Image 1 (cartoon, rainbow, N blue to C red):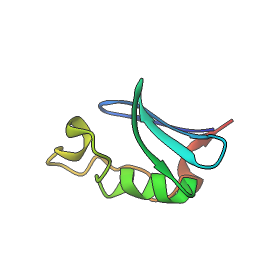
Image 2: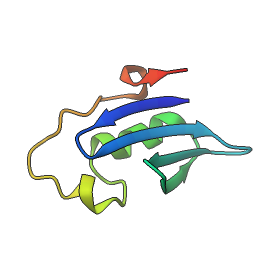
Image 3: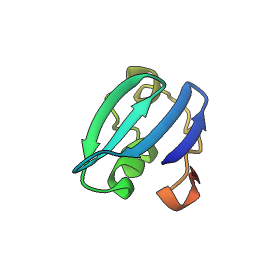
Image 4: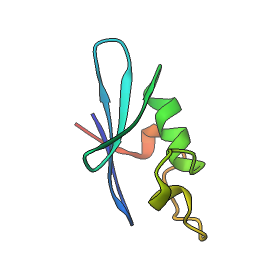
Amino acid sequence: MFYYESPVGLFTIAKDEDCYILQLDDEILGRYNSPEAAADDVYTQHTGSFLWDSLDLPPAAPTGVNEWQSS
């Protein structure tokens, strides 16, 4: 599992049976073929979360999943 504590909440990327799930706190934002694809949507602010995607100032999100915390 991967974690990123953002200014609007905790993003997680977790392995499911056949995909990776991106969540912001308790809200599922999407299902992805790879953790890299999920992390890229966070970085580019294309997650589907209004709170995150509408931030005007770049929040300095990690550029790739390798910069997220993992467990």
